[in-house]
Image (cartoon, rainbow, N blue to C red):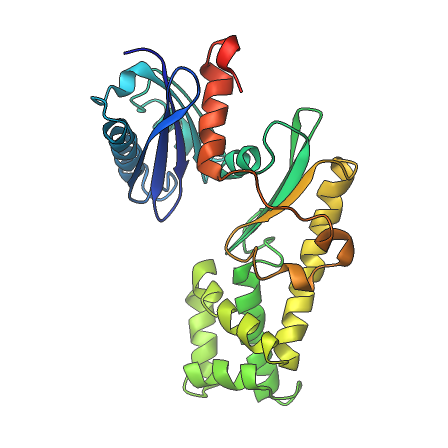
Length: 294
């Protein structure tokens, strides 16, 4: 059948696969369900395998996963036990597991130096300088993820209680947040005690919505988040010495730039490609013959 390379972009919602031929050209794509190797590694393995099979079928080929070399970009790759468990059970001829951030970096900036900030429910920043990768932040909601959707939502709830207690002025954003909880601050407290990052993040769209209306509390929250992102972007920019592309990725990437410092706004550029393309590229670079490594 020849050499084939598979790139996997696996997350908590879905798993995407792309199949490249021996020349490094993408010929098929597939998609399956959630592939969180921390919470459910066996289901993740099932969906990784399924997405790869669909990619073969999409290319008009009989699935032969054992003939393919793969690079998998997976969240939770820094937890050794989970990675070892999954790695030992993958169906591919050869495979390596990297972080989802690494494949996003490869897709966004290609083979050159540069940096990305991924800003969604959480945050992480990755720079490449002279071939060496540097990761900044991304330590999780409890101790990190400043400027993330989870943090913005958390700040919105906090602001609503400050307004309820008349410490801060009551604005339309705080009114809207409190209304969701029956205007009872105890309901806010009960929610926050058990909430996960994604639960806090569901309140983030309101922050951006009310900021566009000029709401003082929403603007204050976004300025806080933007200042945190500016600091992280300063760090990765110093690593790359200001060279190469600087890309903002993730669900909040289209919303944040207007609140960032001009020194970053003026440098931001569109990513060259997506994370899945980055995964395929890394599979070819890592496992392909020298003449097709891209």
